[in-house]
Length: 264
Image (cartoon, one colour):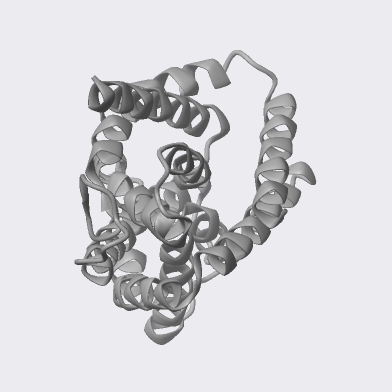
């Protein structure tokens, strides 16, 4: 009964994360990570591993949701293939490096950095600061370096990469539909290699609870994946009904509250 209740809680979390991701147009990681930290705390999981477990689990869920999103954008022809393949080596190396950085940090410090990152995103949304269009992408080396930065920061905080990749692609001259589509494709290798590295890094950790393989909690993964995909569509429909400005400010306020909670 306890396991069933826990899975039900994860389904609710997935539904909330999916709805807000579709409603506010951001990757689910910004919502899933703090929600998992809260849920794991209620379950009495050791705080030493809570933050790493939340980030690893978030990346694992993004593998599934990112694959679905990438396929949809691929069918619509909104992925810049050349840009994606130029970014890909950096994304993979950066994702792995980001996990190693996370592993070297304590849970408390990692939570503080996550809080600062969320606050910066919230401020950007509150001020309505969007990506500035550019003219042309840099060469293969420049794109590879950019991929490394995007991959490392995204894996470090358990997000899909859209927060960083969309502005970068826009600066490289991509139309917004192409920036979003290419960003969705970039999120898949970040999440895949990041999740695998988190599993290997946490393998055999005695502080991890039952149901976890390394730093990925499978019951949470299952519940979030099952509920987040259909509810993301619901959130997207709801976004067309509500005021865009109100939505942006509401989500910015939510991010600021979440970020301050991590800092305090």
